[in-house]
Amino acid sequence: VQLQASGGGLVQAGGSLRLSCAASGRTGTMGWFRQAPGKERAFVAVISWAGGSPVYADSVKGRFTISRENAKNTVHLQMNNLNPEDTAVYYCAARSATVMTTTRRAYNYWGQGTQVTVSS
View 1 (cartoon, rainbow, N blue to C red):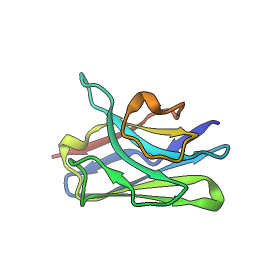
View 2 (cartoon, rainbow, N blue to C red; view 1 turned 120 degrees about the vertical axis):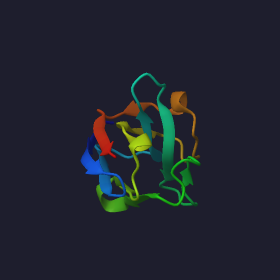
View 3 (cartoon, helix red, strand yellow; view 1 turned 60 degrees about the vertical axis):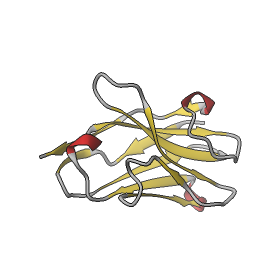
């Protein structure tokens, strides 16, 4: 399975961006991680094709929304009220299992990163 991420960019604090990730094949769960300079890659959000409520990192709850387009094997990450602490390279990830997990090493497939920069 190949993942193609898109939608990063530069935005001012308080602004919004929407990331998308298209999978070339069927997956069980898809999620987003992010890596800021000098930091480890961290969980952001995950959604399962089997249903259930998405899971979010505490730092993005209420601001980010992950959604899916079943017919297109695509997930989106709507990011609102962005702040400079959200600046990072965002990575799309997927795995075959439908059980959602926030553990990075549980994901088999990774997309290329997309840069999100939030200016103050």
